[in-house]
Length: 111
Length: 111
Image (cartoon, rainbow over all chains, first blue to last red; front, side, top):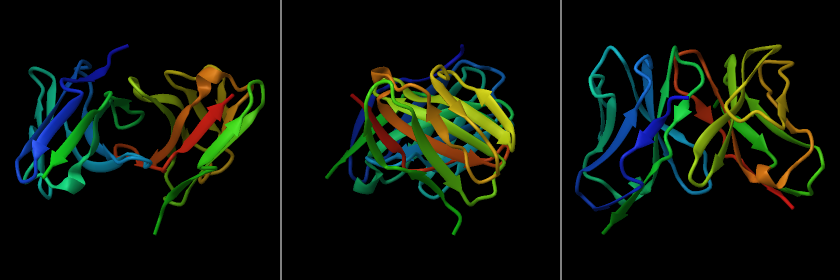
């Protein structure tokens, strides 16, 4: 079946820098996209979501961009902090039910 | 506060045994999901339910079953545990078209 993928398995950034995590999806019918953060030993935690009728959505220090033309999703984290170190997953869904997850990107924030 | 809890957090069992993992949510969500997480595969959907008495197979449902007798619970049963089912299992719940809330997982080892 169609799947969600990530461009980079690991990303290392310095504290205070901005981080960008990318995700490619292949199901053009997907209409809802979610970013999750997962820390060691815990379940995925919701960060931000975006629907297909939008191309940008901002939260606290995070921004999600959706480019439906090239089926690309990105998560931008401003002023990255050590507490942002985790694995980040993008997920897509059609009509808001079962999610299809990407394999994850590990973000490491160095002082 | 509403929450989703999984039990046990850790379990070790032998091949061939029947194992049941519990998932309980107090969000009053109709939708509930079970995923497994393995290195290199991300989160893969096992079974899901859109309401009481409703169950559906996901991407990797072979060897697993679920039942939904009430809104709060979706237990996952491994009929005859196999070593390939060693994994971390996550339960999630949501309202339609809303982000899924995840439990903190059950780490299952099958020897």
